[in-house]
Image (cartoon, rainbow over all chains, first blue to last red; front, side, top):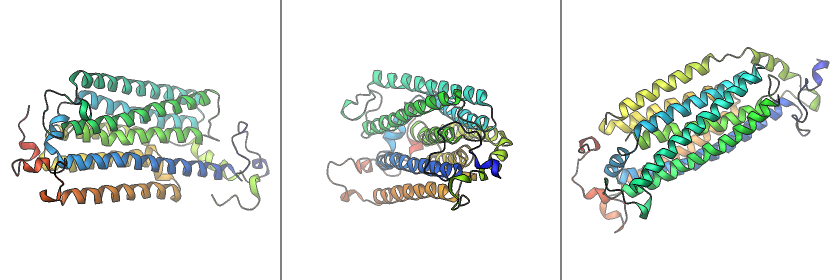
Length: 218
Length: 139
């Protein structure tokens, strides 16, 4: 066991001095990330609760507005995000199998999917602006003029907007991790940083899995 | 977690075996989950565009929960995480449940005079009773 007392050829600066072992550090990092994800889940839960209340009050308006959304765009975006989650999972798999090049390619693919998602979302937002299907007092959509329609679009913009902010944040995190991957930081010995970035990206995917049927498929 | 013991940072050894294990870690579950997620997306699109009335929302939520469970367990590795990590996730779900349940229970059990005048609540209660979503004229 004596040769294993050394940190096994880890790159410099991975094991912080206040952790007794890398195992403990990894577990602390994972727990910290999950605590953060729990707060993120509750942040979105607040919006989903608001959605539940107003959908209950305005079932017809919500159904009618939902049918004026671009279902094709929403569906393609769902497939894009699910696939990007898959490529992140693969990136972690390749990193822990000591294939940093394959991991980097998967991360680049993920970033491209994320850009694609934002592009499609931008096309949708442009349509809403042209139709004046906007939140609150800015609502002047000709095709749906029933009470509650403005509220649907308020929630739609809040929820997809906050989700979009998370996509941008996730892209920044993944870009940093891609840079670290190219530097050769992640391997079978240590890949927790990559894993945590992946967790954040999967959360973005999780939120969209609920947004898609609740907004587009009423 | 507990193996490091009093001997301190010298004991990095334990994870050497662990990382060896990870080297033979398989990508097959990820591919299976990815395909399953695509199939479920097709399914939720199909049921969602059929407008199944009162069953539409439960079906959509059931499919979304199934998809989320796959992402959380396999992509996010909750299936082989420590108990502490799983408990954090489970706790957040409990609080989401509490928040949604009591809020919706409040709104669902209000009767019209209990909603303040001018409030958005209850606006559509004045519409003909029993008009379900799927009976709404399709435009």
